[in-house]
Image (cartoon, rainbow, N blue to C red):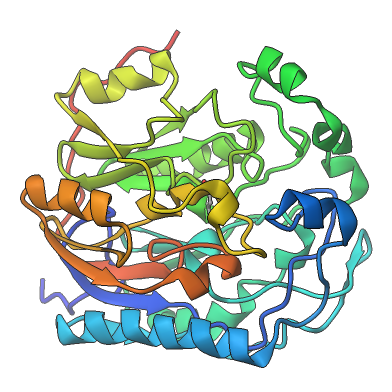
Length: 380
Ligand code: DAV
């Protein structure tokens, strides 16, 4: 059979990259306060004194982020990677649906949160926050293009949840730390289990095995939906948990595969004992990330992610990794492990939701679906 080359094909986070979408900051807004999100200023004195801003971010701030995103894109292009960008969307518009309204939306800096490639499939996540309900729109033209030019490409969009008040457990935000600690094995966060809810960035692709973090942005029902959706195609979906992360959202600052056999792990967020078996039973190694260059208090004032954005690295191949320019301890560790490290400035992007891994969505990586975990644990 003569086979036209596929455009959409990506099974892992590390195979050699050929085509990628990199986010853009145009028209970005501050994320609104809503039942699934309580943004706060980084400075605890200011946070207690003034509310989190609303509406559009300043033009200069958008421009600084766009410059760093352009640098990320340019480095990839210099490596021979085809780089695509999302289309413009006005995030300053309010949303009104039959179930909720929000005064403005967010941005298209983090395609990782919304879109995911599973082999030849592009899947749009349900999303978990109201301001991000329509965040698939800036990617739709690209998806149509892939769908029209690649006959093997499968396109799916997960069912949209209502995001009505009943989908959220707002008491979650009021729990004192001691209560969170007592409940840390329950994995109950700010979304209930009534609807299918997941952000794409809680998934991590390791060939035939997909791990999905239960979090504030992905519930058990969402993981169940992914299981039923992906397992008939021969993939295996494993829920994973990090009990010491009391506000988990997105797996890519916690548990980051670098190449076959090696995971960059977060020393403050160890994986649950029972979830370790898949990795240890197949000879994978956990390598703890060093302390990040910034403390949580030193992160940019409007940034809602933790200092562990340091770990949000992006693989160009199993031996080449992009890392933030000031994360010298992590760079040293990666070099000592034999990686070629590319350091780029990216801190102006942090307040737009993430670092390199978040700001990208890989469309094509060389390679096929490999079984890296032949010894499957029996889950109790
Ligand atoms: O650890 O703060 C941030 C994820 C960004 N999308 C963290 C997770």
